[in-house]
Amino acid sequence: MCGIVGYIGHRQAYDILIKGLKRLEYRGYDSAGIALSDSDYRVYKCKGKVSDLEAQTKDQNINGKIGMGHTRWATHGEPNDSNAHPHKSMNGKFVIIHNGIIENYGKLKQGLEKEGYTFYSETDTEVLANLIEFYYINNRKNGNSFTPEDAVRAALNMVEGAYGLVILCEDNPGQMIAARKGSPLVIGIGKDEYFIASDATPIVEYTNSVIYLNDDDIAVIDDKGLSLKNLKNIPQKPAIHKIDLELSEIEKNGFEHYMLKEIYEQPRAIRDTYRGRLNFESKFLRLGGLHNVFKQLTEANRIIIIACGTSWHAGIVGEYLFEEFTRIPTEVEYASEFRYRNPVINKGDLVIAISQSGETADTLAAIQLAKKAGAIVIGVCNVVGSSIPRETSAGVFTHAGPEIGVASTKAFTAQVTVLTMMAMAIGQANKGLTNQEFTDLIDELYVIPDKIEKILEKSEKIKEIALKIADSTNSLYLGRGYLFPVALEGALKLKEISYIHAEGYPAAEMKHGPIALIDEKMPVIVLATKDHSYDKIVSNIQEVKARKGVIIAIVTEGDTTIKEMADYVIEVPHSDFALAPLLTVIPLQLLSYFIAVERGCNVDQPRNLAKSVTVE
Ligand code: G6P
Image 1 (cartoon, rainbow, N blue to C red):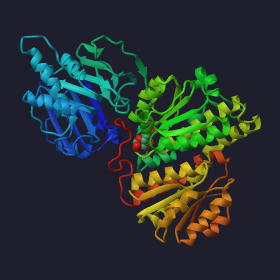
Image 2 (tube, helix red, strand yellow):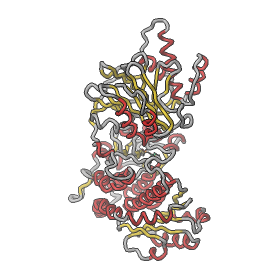
Image 3 (cartoon, helix red, strand yellow):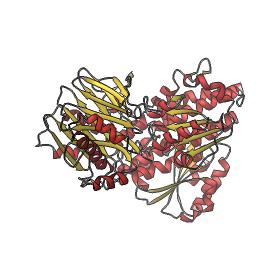
Image 4 (spheres, rainbow, N blue to C red):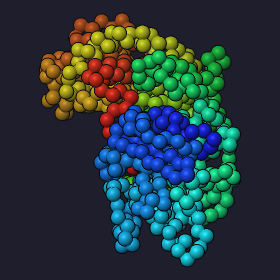
């Protein structure tokens, strides 16, 4: 949450910062701001989007070869001009931008107030700016050579919480300081220039050499280059990585919205995710990232999947897959619940953390807890270089490519693809699957992208249905077995981007409550492809119909029974039950998309949400 971008080098910083902020806007869009420095520094900031900031700075002095920018997802204090970042310290010595939460800011603020500090905003960040300044001014009073870096280190040693920070000091106008604990920061290294950002997307245009800051790192960049030390002032050796990200991957490429582009990218994302791991001809499957722990995985007593949001829904699909293919008891937990409820974790338990961003604060904390308890922890992540893959000893990347739309689409299907392959590999090894079942699954998984392409061809029809129900205020999504988590995901997609209240339910549970809501204004989206519970779902459809609900059914191609009962049907190709989530979720994504567009909602940046949730 919150996007940070910084530049120090030989170019004018303004354009780099604005472009970078636009790329990071998916991380939060409550307010935006920049600070530019040449001999002095200037701060411009406002409530709203980066485009509002651009309008505000149109006639201003935007010169400066050093600068930093911020796009905010509000934690402390409502989104307004004064709570917007950058924040200046009271005497104007420091200006900072921050992603994260300073948990003990109340206590620190009281202490600073006793020292005469006053505050113009409600933010924890302003407290930090003043704390840094306090140490700086006080330690220099008696002629001490205390540097801005020393002041930052002294202040950060007092702080509890999470931060990604960029800091400028008025006394050292040619220097930029960056620090990280909990919230991600990447430094891009160009020729005599450096870029700082919350993720690589603002950097990729200029360089592909990056350093991922570790927790407790403090980086100082000036005309001498970059120096890296930790909170204890011990020098750290920066590890330079090459990022493998093309600019075209983070652009809309002719699509009206990122979300639509990402929905259409799913066949490619799934192929990229299984490419090199699954060989259709030799019926071979190997997940290189699990090689070192594979034996332990096949012998695990229990699998615990931890995740948040859409990744948690992929986790439930994973639970069904693991239990069916490997017979290893599996449970799925919200990372936020897991970390605070003293869960039973035994040595030898396998914990799988799923996260698109690799930065979700609750998932990261849950991983740390599981590691401490002696579990084998593996990650399923999309962003290379993010915190979760670095925190886990083994894992499998989803190769969905950058996902910019706040509502997750291609990351979900790529996660389900990875979980399917993991369950298949373990099932093959521990004989949970027969050889025939295993090879049939390989064949089925291989053609899933082609089947998704066929569903995407139906988007006009899905749009027509969307227009019919776009005025609804409530909706219900029903599914059984593997399609229950898809119902949850479909409902989440709709509420996230269209603000229509939507609930996902196991179809049989409908009669224990939600059925009371059904009337002729209530769309009920039923996942009803042909599987072993087909007859049961047909009965559930009858129950909805008897109460005059509007039925939109996702059915297997050629189905005639449900066609006669439902108001609208969307056909998907036949597949193995276990792979049906990869197909049935596609019409639900498109339905939500078209409804949200029809309602005039900001599809890529829905209100109050952010893509990367780095606060708990
Ligand atoms: C936010 C995003 C969701 C995402 C969830 C978990 O809520 O808006 O799309 O599913 O975080 O994020 P992760 O990056 O851990 O998958």
